[in-house]
Length: 389
Image 1: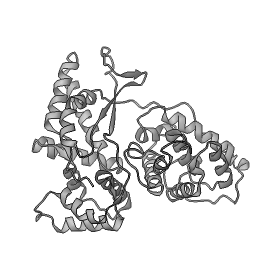
Image 2 (image 1 turned 120 degrees about the vertical axis):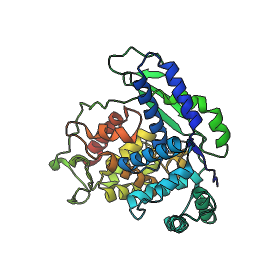
Image 3 (image 1 turned 45 degrees about the horizontal axis):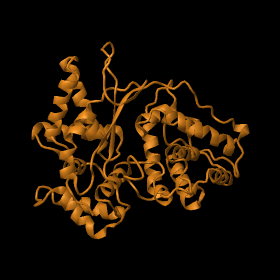
Image 4 (image 1 turned 60 degrees about the vertical axis):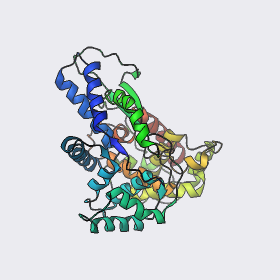
């Protein structure tokens, strides 16, 4: 079990980013340089935090940048993140569950929720009297209770889009581009060789992080058509369930014919047709008030419904939603990944303007790929016709 207090961003890397921006975008005004650097730094720190709601992550990001990078000129580390999270009311499931998943990801091990709660209580009782870093204390407390977890892949992708300022000259950047902008993938090590790898990858991080800017969200012209009530046929009457989220009516939880769903998934050669996978996904959808077909449509977009003949099928099936970047980086249980995915959908659907398509709105937070919304919508429509209509 790795207990390294890995650095997320160091002052040296920050200086490299600034120097690169000054050189690469010499024709832009200084205020634009500052905007690019600030946004790139925020992007890196934000993505390394637990999957809290946006307002919580934004607040933590601001505090970490201010206290670590600006006030003490030190790195932003895992220890800093735990220190910042400790005052949060962890009796709130919306905070505790993402933190629990994040700790498991960092330590590459699984722990019962009660054990982590005990560890947090122990840390709180030691406040001001610690003789070792907070992350080390937590890791040592959890170590005797660790359960095996699939090993994480070396590295974590940080994809940062950048669009030139309006009215400015075209920028020449060596990266894959399309009409939405440019994307560069930066690999950040997560395991035992972190100190060495972070040093070697500083230049790569600097080069990637500057290719960042505000990405203008464009509403998709396609609209969701809710299935007509008279056309819906299910194995039992549809229950009227109060909305638990801000999703449109068409994406609220509905009872579905599991026999038809099984038949559909089997036609895709999907292991998710097995009850051990199907039932936890439907349970998560019901808990968070989400149409189960939306949950399965996401697995179709992310992992082609996890075909049985894939050599890593049993591993992928633990996280077919690719929560926390991918099934390779975060491998847990189908129950946990389904709940994280459902909570992410609910959080991502908040405050949607009426004129913006809900799939496109969710896309903003759920996936870097701007075509994700079109893919999920298409699969959802197809499944609705086959299973619900």
